[in-house]
Image (cartoon, rainbow, N blue to C red; front, side, top):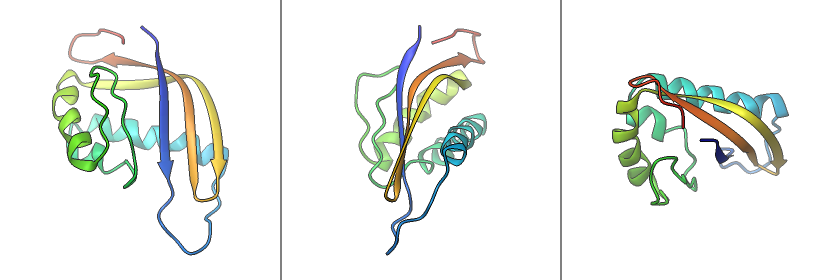
Amino acid sequence: WKISQHHSSVMPEASKPQAITEAEVKNLFQLWNSALATEDPDAVAKRYSKEGVLLPTVSDIPRTDYALIKDYFVGFLKKKPQGEILESHVTIGSNWCQDAGIYEFTMGATGDKV
């Protein structure tokens, strides 16, 4: 399976916009992927902004706040996932960025790819 991804990160609230490069936006995925490797749902959930929305890979329930995002990763991390971006489209706005595209997970617990 190839999953269409929509990974958005909002920059911390500030009085003036903070610049971010395309390379820095792409690195946000690596930071998130490293959080997956900790197998700590709290560490992963903290990678999302206050306004973050998670459309999960293996759930049909949108996760729209910290508690719901953390709850999803409690179960998902048991599969020991590691992600790889196959296609990336970066958009940068005023104090926000988005890296949308296609990614694939390899589940370390089973070797399955989703």
